[in-house]
Length: 112
Length: 111
Image 1 (cartoon, rainbow over the protein chains, first blue to last red):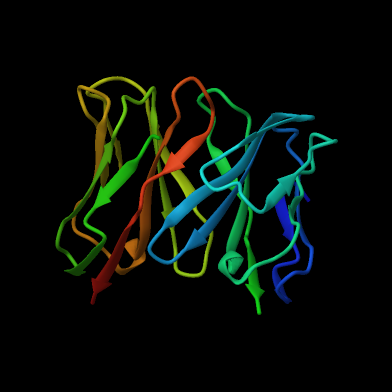
Image 2: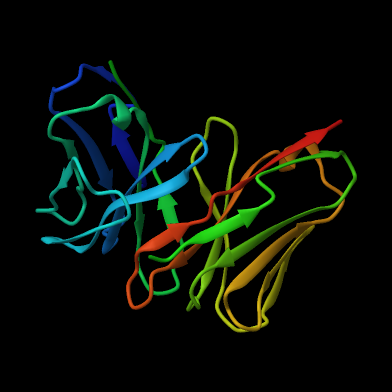
């Protein structure tokens, strides 16, 4: 099915563990983004990618790693999860220019 | 760095009343986007404004981009319960496609 999907939708992990959140889009959009959403902070950009193999830091990149070997996938890895990374994570994609941005359904991550 | 603020943070209105949220950027924006997020959902694109002073309407929603391209507003006429949610504005960091989101305005509509 066309669209943007995220997996898992819910994840509980422990402090210090590595966690990878997956994002897949079927539109061949050039741009992809990772945002986190916390109460009182709105949506904050973690990383974004303008194309395969091109990534750049956003507002809050510390503790996160991204890669984009294929246009359609943009995984986000928490190398050593901390409680402060408990949040809802949204992946998004866009064709660029004046095109709209489409958001995935989100992953709710809890770090114990 | 670039900051995008929205006011108010929360707004409760009686159904049928009007509602306005304001978005202010610390820097001039090339364009601004507006999103709506229903409770428990993900942000959904509403509209994009590009030109200075631009006004766009979508049924009961009116969007405006300031003359200096540093502020914007969303006005909803005669709110309905279906308007409940959080409204976000977002603008790109200068010279990039990195969209920074405003803090959002959470709207509750009382029937």
